[in-house]
Length: 252
Image 1 (cartoon, rainbow, N blue to C red):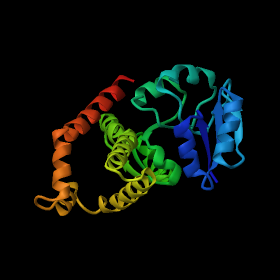
Image 2 (image 1 turned 60 degrees about the vertical axis):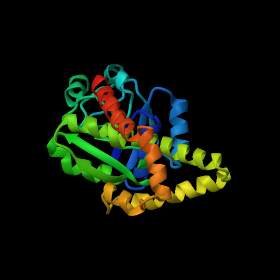
Image 3 (image 1 turned 45 degrees about the vertical axis):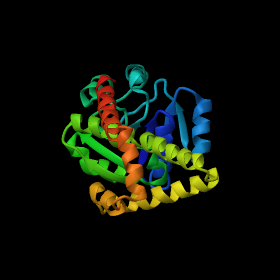
């Protein structure tokens, strides 16, 4: 199996590694060996672990999972020239990565935390010579979509990369609303989970507006609740969330 070298051992790296294990050999590089041991324990398999300082990346396939603010520091600690870097760093451009790391190629990727269960929606862009390899690698953790520009992947970061947090907020709020009206929390949680599971299947086949129209009958319960959401500017808030997250990605 091909070896993927993870540079960084945070939550996103762990989620991707969980999706890749069994399909690729995994090794991880970081600054704190105790955290690397925890990464291995959480991953549930035995992996090679290395300290960042003077680690030789020559001819390796790297999956870069560090914080954008640490790019220069991490790059300075490595030696050798990587075969290719697949970066999950929000907002870090191909030019920035190539100017800091010694590598033959860079592909930007934006997976999300659903990678750990093989359900990530991952957007990609960068060196087109590695497009197919990127699609196969990240396809191991869910669906992929190659985009034609870095602007587009920054927008997609705001949607799919950050999206689980938005949906988690909505899920929590809906459960709290049901509890407020008298439903037991465990029953509200079970109902919400079933809702999201079914909705995830439906939205793949049905346009959102048609799905909404199919549920909302005149003067019914859905219409009443939907009106409350519109009164709360939920639609505008969602659009503003994408705008704010996109602008933040451009700043990183």
